[in-house]
Amino acid sequence: MHPLNAKYPAAGTIPQGTDIGHVHLKVSSIDRALDFYCGVLGFELMATMGDSAAFVSAGGYHHHIGLNTWHSRDAGPPPARATGLYHVAIRFPTRRDLAVMLKRVVDAGVPLQGASDHGVSEAIYQADPDQNGIELYRDRPREEWPRDANGALHMYSQSLDLDALLREAE
Image (tube, rainbow, N blue to C red; front, side):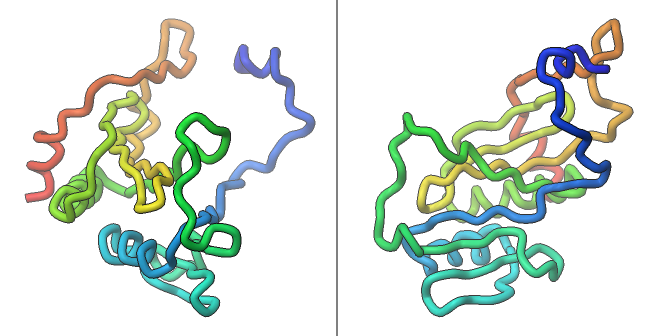
């Protein structure tokens, strides 16, 4: 048993294979959000509900990200010091795929908010046009994850070499 599980026991066991199916974001403009999610990141538009909602996907799934203006049309972003979503993490299958996405984001002039090596993953941070946090990342293979002397997972945050990553996009 992981030591944290003794302090925070689960109410039950969540089935292995459970994952996060999609995230739904409040945005101020569907068109502006689609310019970013489809035009910059490359998601595919799967469906719309008039001009109030859109659903985008990677690889033909019904939707990985829902975008809506139901309570947020023409609204500004939430204050920085408030509860809510910190970021949506979009995982890429390979380091090269992450590098190609980094190049696309940089070429589109999207400002980066950070870039970290977490040992288990490499991540690039930015925000969408409504200031929703976006993490673009790739996982390292499990056998490469850092572990302490007792075998427990040891994640960390170190600077990610963006120049080296961008060279992989060439």
